[in-house]
Image (cartoon, rainbow, N blue to C red):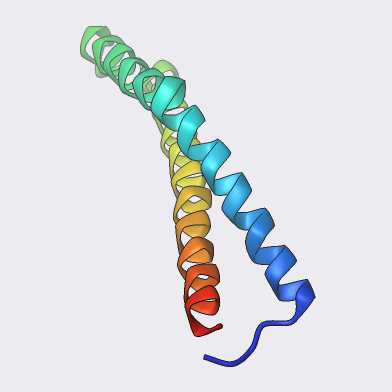
Length: 94
């Protein structure tokens, strides 16, 4: 691995910090919120008539939004973990 510039180190540090914040938020609130919202949406779906296309689509849109939110947060967490690995490798090198 080549030597990181100060700008690269700053970027990795910022990603590491953001990933840590995202991880704590996810663990403390977001994961359970997403699970509960999915259960609620599933119950709504079960109670809808197959002919209620508008509300079926709304449930689908809400599920898509929850999935997208969770995916984005998990991506930030993973990026933070990878930044930590890169920074740790750089420290071991020195």
